[in-house]
Amino acid sequence: MTATDHELEGPDFNGGVTLSAIADGAMLTGHVDHEPAVLVRRGDELFAVGAKCPHYGGPLGEGLVVGGTIRCPWHHACFSLRSGEVLRAPARDPLPRWRVEVSDGIAYARERMERELRPTLSSTHLPASVVIIGGGPAGNMAAETLRDEGYGDPITMLSADSALPADRPNLSKDYLAGRASEEWALLRPADFYPENGIDLRLNTRVARIDPRQREVELSGGERLSYGALLLATGAEPVRLEVPGAALDHVHYLRSLDDCRALIAKAQKAQRAVIVGASFIGLEAASSLRARGLDVHVVGPEAIPMARVLGPQLGAFIRKVHEQHGVTFHLGRSAVSIDEHAVTLDNGERIEGNLVVVGIGVRPATALAEQAGLALDRGVLVDQYLETSAPRIFAAGDIARWPDQRSGQAIRVEHFVVAERQGQTAARNMLGRREPFDAVPFFWTEQHDLGIAYVGHAEKWDEVVIDGSIEARDCSITYLSEGRKQAVAVIHRDHEGLLAEVEFERALGGSADACPAPRKLTEVA
Image (cartoon, rainbow, N blue to C red; front, side):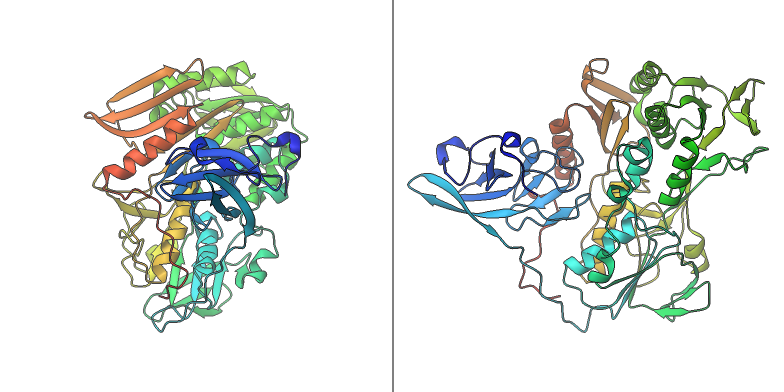
């Protein structure tokens, strides 16, 4: 897709740019053949790549160049400058790139360069087939990465969902709010999977895993053999156990089917009661307000999101919701639901003909337990995301991995983490031995407030605010015993990227930080 001339900014790189206009390590935003582009200089090398992140269209010119990579300021996708390929999710498609020629101190962008496809891997050490259990972000990204890496043998993805793999953050944000189509909420269109030789089986449940025979048995009795297996079953919503919780107008939000059902009810409802002031609950509250519903939020905490984001930011989030017409009932819990209202523990009845429950999730570990895998509030994996059973990997919400920063095993329920683990697990199935060391990242959008969060702080004893939360211009640092654990930013995307790189380099990471792209001639 090309931009119209009035949407383009900066110089036309076809006409040339003087080298003095771009410093070493810097980038310049412009355009090539009516497409937005950035020109990046690294020493004597120049690279011209697309200026829009293929994930959500983030402006790469406002991002960060780190070694031979460029990072998106919005959701921290990482790309190779040399090849344009995606090194780190959430982007899935490579950047366009153009050949750069220098003559008499002028840099010119020339012809568009075709993507260099990886040769098909050929090795007796590769798995004869890969089975992926789970149709979420980790499983989907693993399947894509295997193909991108040149793996040519069978890939079977088994999903219990009836819908194609979805962009889960959209389910509580733009799609639920009515600002995005269902097609945009899908990770890939239906024809992507057969075109890439991925046998995606929907409505398919796995009954058991046999690690000794390296087989997976489906609920219908069919058995599939595997050379490598990825367990990416994700997490399941915690169910509300009160009278009336099973009524038809009570909804949970995890899958695309859940979101479809919720939208159908929202189109006829007047008032929604959200039980749980979690990220899902508050994002759903924001989206349902965008649809014009009267929204009430019930939660046991005194300040929403204080446990994750701290009391100052939590109080501001509440204020933003209230400014948009949301009513809070905090310090309260639901004790019963009927067709017309939710009753709280203080006897108050909140009228509502739509109820959304968002009180947390639990890792779906039943298959892992049946298979005898090591568990600890999730599936234990090593630094390569391999479980206690050889050739079985785990990624996403179920995986508890050794975190180098804390020295402890952690499990993180974030979409971007799941996709990045899918990438790493896929490469390690092919023998890459790539440690998973990506810094956790997530973002939330509630009404007109966007917050990005880098790092992982299960606990902290100090919160340092630089700037003003009220002015929506700040970075918030969470420390434990003086050590930085995480950083949240509002309208300071560049600082969020710098914090990510700081965390990576604290672990002794290279200048490139993102996984290095494999040479095109390399064969496992």
